[in-house]
Length: 448
Image 1 (cartoon, one colour):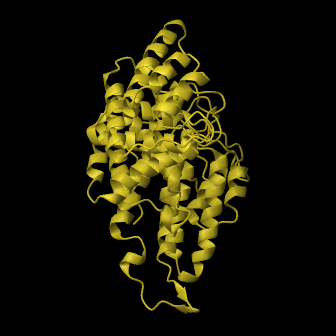
Image 2: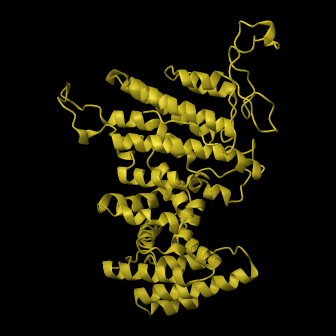
Image 3: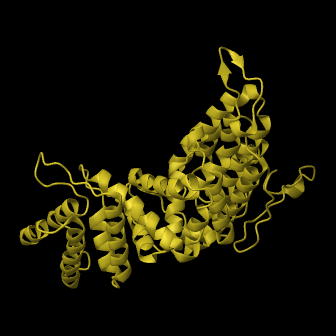
């Protein structure tokens, strides 16, 4: 590597960047012939940092700066390299060497260039770059993934009106990248504040993607070998948790956004439409998204069973439901003086529906006692009470005892005293049972 470095030092910045990609292509191609997963050692990473990201190796040296034209030319060089390299394994390891965070001063330059490269790949539809970015999102800590998501949202949903149409087109070009992008975006926009409510163009695009092909958000899960313990601090296998958060929190988050501002203790006389509140378009989009999420949850039982993961892997972690319920409770308390009863009711109805279908499909693994404890502080909601305390439904899964949700072993409240022979007590009506049958159209009408 030292000989390569000395030859690169005699070149201009763009020639050196192109040359280092050429040398590393040869290096990793030979490595892959002897090992399926070669280890990226320190030497190649240092070359990339010095000659691509312009971070000087010597301490105290001033970093080089590419002007805007040179940076555009560098992005074109990189796009062309990934497009022309026919071996996916070589592309992936070069991309990983370039953009895997190293925890050093080069990471800011690394992330900045990555955002511009992926943005260019979207604009000119460079599928190999998008596929490499999808793999990068899957194996990179979430704090970096949301930075890439933010860069793309800024470029295509905020800076230039109408440019979201370009982003929409990658749905058919790289569904795998779309799945990872949705997961990153739901991690970025968690509705914790008004600034973290997803832009309308972004929301509409994602809802239409999922509505057109609900399996889109399962692509990573269906095509990834599942480890026994999923790593902490990385993106989840599906964006389901984030999408549930959007649907459930949206009525309360938009109502909070509509809250009149206080000035010297006085309420503003009028709240304009621009100041917040969920308009009809947003309301319909979240209802449409909620329906799609429930439909995807119903698909999961078949897929979990096929992978021999039914009852063993919860794609929606109970630990992630805890902060969601806490946020709903906090927002409900905060908005109560604003007469937000309809929004609170809608939010809790959606939560109850999502919990019920997630448990019935095996996506959420928890006991009924856990669920009762979790929801005990929420405002009263009839549908939520029905979910956490009954009725018990017949499970179509042969591995489960009849009459119980997956991994919910506590009989529902009020049913323990019913005798085994209901004919002896004709005055007690039996509750109609409803079985979730995989493959059937889900008879759900979004709440208006």
